[in-house]
Image (cartoon, rainbow, N blue to C red; front, side, top):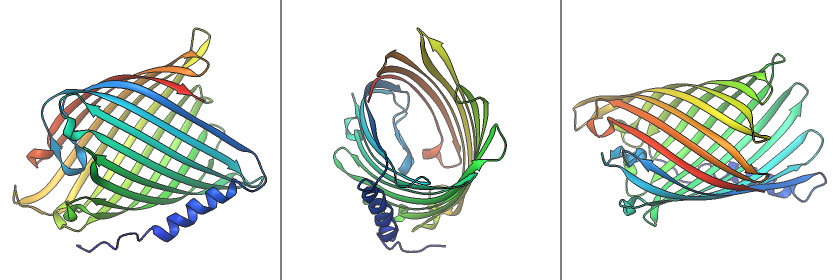
Amino acid sequence: MTYRITRRKLFSSCLLAGMLSLMSVYTLGETETSGRISLGAEYDSNVSVDEIDRSSSEGDIARIFSADLRVAHDITDTVSSTFSVDYTHVGYSSFDKLNRKTLVIGANLDKSMGAYTVGLDYFFIDAKLNGKKFLRYERIAPSVSGFIKKRWFLRGSYAYAEKSIENRPGRDARNDGLEMDAYYFVSGLRQYLNLGYTFRNEDSVADRYTYESHQVKLRGVQRITVFGRLAAMELGVRYEERAYEGLSPSIDEQRWDKRLRLTGEIEIPLLENLYVTVYGGYSDYDSNLPSADYYQSVLGSRIEFVF
């Protein structure tokens, strides 16, 4: 069903979450500040802009700089908060018109209720392409989580989001989703598995961009000792199916997507606060819409200073 977005619909709830998180810094309790700065480079076999279903079918090398800051504060013995800011700049060698700058602001409140924790998360994303406005995205998600057995941890949440893409009003959308994650700790944080499921209903201004999706994921994390320090290895697989509501004019039928993504990375500590990470990924986007049907491989590395 097509509708017109009321911009800033999330403003009041998002402002509340952000204000509560910021105000908590001035209350009694412990405050911890952490962050990281990283420099890296990656090769992308098919430079693309996923949000608008555009791929170049050509590869390029990108330089990546990112920095983030996180402030965590315990308001009371049972209530905690975090506030985070993350900035990323991706600069391509040839596709400089797709250079991307992304700012992410997040706030979180958690309250422990015995064996369970209830939380409220908020994210705001502002992305620019070639220095121009491109994407604005806001998301708020209440959640509940806790251990159901010694090794099993579950987290469930409902997420509501709104997005706006500059100069493409038909793609402006609101999003309702249900998310469930299960963690099985084989050996604490040294070795664990994460199985997740997400249902999403994205209601766009233009019917042809409205869809429902089902997504499953599986991640495995293993920490090993390298040169006397803990290194982390992670492998993941994610599969998603999308069914679109309206007819896509270019194919004169309803669009469908099947997306498979494989990822892997290893993070190796060089010094106490210095890490090097090597990562790779493969994506197979299968669709009856030609512009959304493509393969993509990514291989990169970065060095990170953590404080």
